[in-house]
Each structure stands twice: as structure tokens, then as C-alpha cells.
Image (cartoon, rainbow, N blue to C red; front, side, top):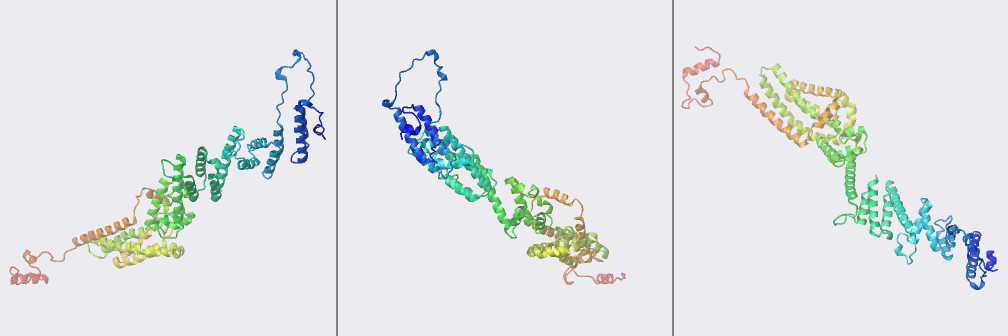
Length: 560
């Protein structure tokens, strides 16, 4: 069968008729469905084209003279602008193409001499926004090196605008994928994809490397997730911490990344301290502010705090407010000073205040049961208040750490006994506060008597009753906001020095206001100077008449 018979054309048909007939028959003999028929069609098409260009087989007819005025205008002459045969073949090969059979279809395109048209049309398909287009573009980037054409031996004439659009879409796809991985917390997958990108040849040019740095910086800053190990990996791989005039990371983003790294390190350290069950003030402050506790659990923890713990809370809250203000939203009620209302929950200051009540009771008892002057009673009260304050400081300094070791036992006994033993609300801790309070009460009774103990107890009960006044928490909050920070050692030193001062003042007052006994200070000058000396000492002899007179005076007799 000749090529003309296979094509269904008369011998000597022109080139236009051959191409038109070939395009019609190509739909019947598709390369993927009938490869043998397509091969025979291709051979007949090429053979017919050779015959049509051979002058020996072309029929030359005399031109017919046509009047010029009967010819149509030039722009009305139809011009063939349809796709070429190679473009048509490439379009058929790419119809319903998938990544699985794309390599086989490309081989068919090479055998049909339309590989270039196949590549161009595949590049055009990759510019769509579909999922299939993304998969095709990934295959094309790996096999055709569209973004690094310098690696290819040939130099295909690909559309420049298509390559630029493909690069922009690749940028967007990579950034979207990395953002999604980071938001899901998949640091390992993010790291693997980043390391593969850092080794890609198409990212070697300087402008593309700068894009990668900027994209990584934006991604790290935009995500809620942060991994210090991942940040260090990126810094090492991209040379962000290299010594030099400036970092390879964009300048504004680099400062923000360093700040976020420091913030993350601060949070990690505080959460690590919060998990430690130590009696360290820093650990307790971190537990109060960063541990996942309920409101009741934080309040109960506050009752264990001593002055050093509250100082650590003040320091940590001030640091959060000044250096890490974004962490305030993680605090209860958005306030790092939420613990102010609980600051006096475990305080022992009522015991020191009760010493003043002890002094008042001692003065009242002394005035009722003796003839001592008020100044004398006041001096004695000040002296004993100072003497009781010193052992109280020592006892509390030794006892509170011991009671803290038995916190669970103290909490159970507090729930059962403290509401019955104290009117204070919330009830004070039994081992930590009530037990040393009444042990010191026994010492007060032994030193000052019943009236001193009565004043001590009445003061404690009164302070406990005042704790139930409405609005107490508001008053405490206002006072705590204007109160200066203090240290436990400063408080201890102040109490000790104050006790010494009170003791000295009390002794001076007591010694200077003592009532003199009968006839004390009425002796003659010579007698007072010679007191304690023997009568044989020169100048201290007492005449017989004077000695007799002194004897009658001492015996209460009248002078003879």
C-alpha cells in the first residue's frame, strides 16, 4: 500500500492537504493506543511530504490569469496559524498524564521527534494551581533542570516568562510546606526538608540563597512553634552566626530571632525549675508562675512561701514585665503579680505583734498588783518584749524549714484542727504557725505571768478576727503595690537590733525610776563617802553620841 493510499489522498497532493489529512488520521492512530499504526502513519506522512517536494512527480499547470480587481484584499487571505504536528503529538501524549507514566510518555515523544514540544507543553501545565500540576512540576524540576539549565548539555529555547513564573510558584510551594510543618510541630520533617533545600543546585545563585535565608527567617518568626535545636541547625547550615561584618540572615529578622531564642531559653529554664521539687526560692517562684497549677493549688503553694520565696517571686515577675512582656498573657489573669493578695498567707508577723500585747498585759498586771510607778512597769515590759523577740526569731528560723518537710501532714492537720483553734481565715497552718505560736505562749506565761499571756492571746485572737473584715484583700493588694522590696536577712537584722535597743531602753528606764527605801540618801556626806570602809579609817570615825543617835533612828525610836 502506497503512502497516498494509506493517507487517502490523490498522488501529487499539496503539502497543505497532506498535513490536514495527517492531523485527521492522527486521531485514529494515537501513539499511546496504536503505536504501530502511528508509526506507519508517520512514515506515510514523511514519504508523502518528500513526494510533494519532488518536482519530477509534481503536476505543473499553466497559471490562470485572474483580473487584479477580483482578488480579495491582502488581510482577508486566510493564513494557517494552527499548531504544528509536533505540538499536536505532544498535546496527545500529555493528555491525562500522571507522574507514574510521565517518563514513558517522554520516551514516546523522543521517538516521535517532538521532545522539545513535549517539554514546553509540560512546563505550561506545571503553571496551574492544581495538585497534579505540583506533582508534574516536581518531576520536571528533577528531570529537565528547569531552574538550573546550566547543568544541561543542550540549551533548550524555553519561554523565559514561564521559567520565572515557575520559580515564583516553587518559592511559594516551599514556603507553604515549611510553614505547615512548623505549625504542626514536626521539627524533624522541617529539618530534613531544609537540609535537602540547602544542598539543591538551583539554590546556589546568590539571589536565590538570599531568598532562602529570608524565607527561613520569616517562617521561624511567624510560627508559634519554636525549637532551639532546629534554630541552631539552621544557624550552622546557613552561617547565620558566622563572624564578620553582618549576619547572612536579614538584619531586622536576625535581631528578632535572637530575642525569641533568648525568650525561649528563659521559658525552658523556668519550666525546668518549676518541675524540681526543691526548697529553693527560685524553684518555688518558677513553680508559682510557670507550673500548670489551678488557682487553689497556687494559693496552697503560697502558704508555704517564706520571705526569700516572695523576694524571688518579685524579682521574677519584674523580669517578666520588663524583659518578656509577651509572657504576661500566659500568667493567670494576664498579670505576673497575681500572687500579691496571697503574700501574707504564710507570714508569722502576728506572733511579733502579739509581743506588744504581752507587754501591755504585763504593764496592766504590774500596776494592779504592785505599787511600782508606770515608768518602771513600762521599762520592765520593754525589756521582756526584747528578751522574748530574740528566741522567737531563732525558733521560727529553725522550725519553719522543719515544718515544711512535713507539708502533707501539716496540710491534713490544718484541715482538721486549725478552723477550731484560730478565728483567722483562711486558717493558719497547724505545724507551721499555730504550734510555734502557742509554744511561745507558754514561754510568755513563764516570763510575764498570767497577764502577759492574756495580752499575748487577746492580740492573736483580735488579729485573727480582723482577717474576716470585708475588703481585706483589696487593702492588702494596695499595700503590697507600694511596699518596698525587702530581704529576709534585713528583716532578721532589724528585729534583732530593735530587740537590743528595747532591752537597753527598758533597763535604763527601770533602773532610773526605782523607788528609794526609807532613809536612803539621808546620810551625811561624810557617812556616804565612808560607806563600806572600816570605822578605824582616818576621817571615818563616828562619835559615840552620833552612833547612838543612828541606832535609835534605825530602831524607830525617838531621839533621847
